Length: 86
Image (cartoon, helix red, strand yellow):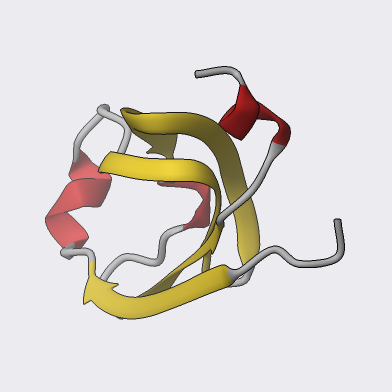
Protein backbone atom coordinates (compact mmCIF):
# COMPACT_ATOMS: atom_id res chain seq x y z
CA UNK A 1 0.00 0.00 0.00
CA UNK A 2 3.01 2.30 0.37
CA UNK A 3 4.13 1.82 -3.26
CA UNK A 4 2.46 4.21 -5.71
CA UNK A 5 4.64 5.27 -8.65
CA UNK A 6 4.06 8.93 -9.48
CA UNK A 7 4.93 10.81 -12.65
CA UNK A 8 5.39 14.56 -12.73
CA UNK A 9 5.29 16.82 -15.77
CA UNK A 10 5.74 20.57 -15.93
CA UNK A 11 5.59 23.00 -18.84
CA UNK A 12 5.10 26.68 -19.55
CA UNK A 13 2.85 28.58 -21.93
CA UNK A 14 1.99 32.20 -22.52
CA UNK A 15 -1.63 33.35 -22.69
CA UNK A 16 -2.03 36.31 -25.08
CA UNK A 17 -3.54 39.56 -23.79
CA UNK A 18 -6.37 39.14 -26.32
CA UNK A 19 -7.76 36.28 -24.24
CA UNK A 20 -8.77 38.87 -21.63
CA UNK A 21 -11.06 40.57 -24.17
CA UNK A 22 -13.10 37.39 -24.55
CA UNK A 23 -16.01 36.49 -22.28
CA UNK A 24 -15.10 32.82 -22.72
CA UNK A 25 -13.37 30.62 -20.15
CA UNK A 26 -9.99 29.00 -20.71
CA UNK A 27 -10.03 25.21 -20.42
CA UNK A 28 -7.17 22.75 -20.17
CA UNK A 29 -8.02 19.43 -21.83
CA UNK A 30 -6.20 16.19 -21.11
CA UNK A 31 -6.76 13.48 -23.70
CA UNK A 32 -6.21 10.53 -21.38
CA UNK A 33 -4.59 9.65 -18.08
CA UNK A 34 -4.46 6.23 -16.53
CA UNK A 35 -5.58 6.45 -12.91
CA UNK A 36 -5.45 9.80 -11.06
CA UNK A 37 -4.05 13.21 -11.99
CA UNK A 38 -3.67 16.43 -10.02
CA UNK A 39 -3.43 19.62 -12.10
CA UNK A 40 -1.70 22.78 -10.91
CA UNK A 41 -1.57 26.15 -12.69
CA UNK A 42 0.87 28.74 -11.38
CA UNK A 43 1.01 26.92 -8.06
CA UNK A 44 -2.78 26.75 -7.62
CA UNK A 45 -4.60 23.43 -7.46
CA UNK A 46 -6.81 23.57 -10.56
CA UNK A 47 -8.38 20.12 -10.21
CA UNK A 48 -8.20 16.37 -9.86
CA UNK A 49 -9.49 13.61 -12.10
CA UNK A 50 -9.46 9.86 -11.89
CA UNK A 51 -10.49 7.61 -14.72
CA UNK A 52 -8.82 5.11 -16.95
CA UNK A 53 -7.78 6.66 -20.24
CA UNK A 54 -10.74 9.04 -20.44
CA UNK A 55 -10.53 12.76 -21.29
CA UNK A 56 -10.69 15.38 -18.54
CA UNK A 57 -11.19 19.17 -18.68
CA UNK A 58 -10.31 21.84 -16.16
CA UNK A 59 -11.41 25.50 -16.10
CA UNK A 60 -8.10 27.30 -15.54
CA UNK A 61 -9.41 30.83 -16.18
CA UNK A 62 -8.91 32.12 -12.61
CA UNK A 63 -5.32 30.85 -12.45
CA UNK A 64 -3.71 32.14 -15.66
CA UNK A 65 -1.71 35.31 -16.23
CA UNK A 66 -2.21 37.20 -19.48
CA UNK A 67 0.83 38.28 -21.46
CA UNK A 68 3.40 36.47 -19.34
CA UNK A 69 4.53 32.89 -18.76
CA UNK A 70 2.24 30.43 -16.97
CA UNK A 71 3.35 27.15 -15.41
CA UNK A 72 1.19 24.02 -15.72
CA UNK A 73 2.11 20.94 -13.69
CA UNK A 74 0.64 17.45 -13.55
CA UNK A 75 1.08 14.82 -10.86
CA UNK A 76 -0.02 11.44 -12.23
CA UNK A 77 -0.65 8.65 -9.74
CA UNK A 78 -0.35 5.03 -10.80
CA UNK A 79 -2.87 3.81 -8.23
CA UNK A 80 -6.05 5.42 -6.91
CA UNK A 81 -9.35 3.99 -5.76
CA UNK A 82 -10.73 4.39 -9.30
CA UNK A 83 -7.99 2.12 -10.68
CA UNK A 84 -9.81 -0.93 -9.31
CA UNK A 85 -13.23 -0.11 -10.79
CA UNK A 86 -12.51 -1.13 -14.37
